[in-house]
Length: 162
Image 1: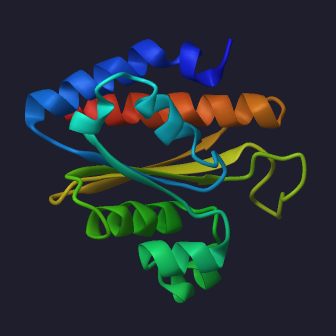
Image 2: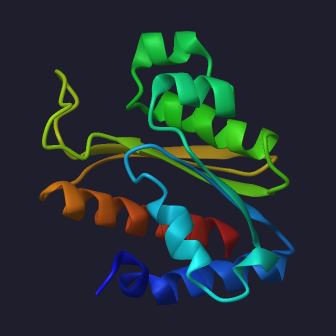
């Protein structure tokens, strides 16, 4: 079973909610490497509510594609609610979407830093009025952390759309 299959019903619900609001969605992803966008676009007809996805794995990509300020990354790190918030805002500005979700984290097995062990994942959800963020400490191997991140990103998006 692929990640798309596991979260297909959730992606369908996100799509129905976005359609109901007449909204388009954009994603900004780092540690998930496009899995959130892939899950959403597994739903037939998703072009009616999914605008685009940004995979910004490097700090340079976050700055170039999403206008994440270098000082935000320097002060808080690439894995932070502040960076996720800037990514979510940047995805809105660089797209035709009304809603965005951003994910940045340490999927492992390497990459941990003091205060940010493997499994630290930060999320942000944005529309033109508000940005909310969340930091989670997820468990498991790289695949499990990435899958749990997709689930959290989609559940958070759905809760904000409904």
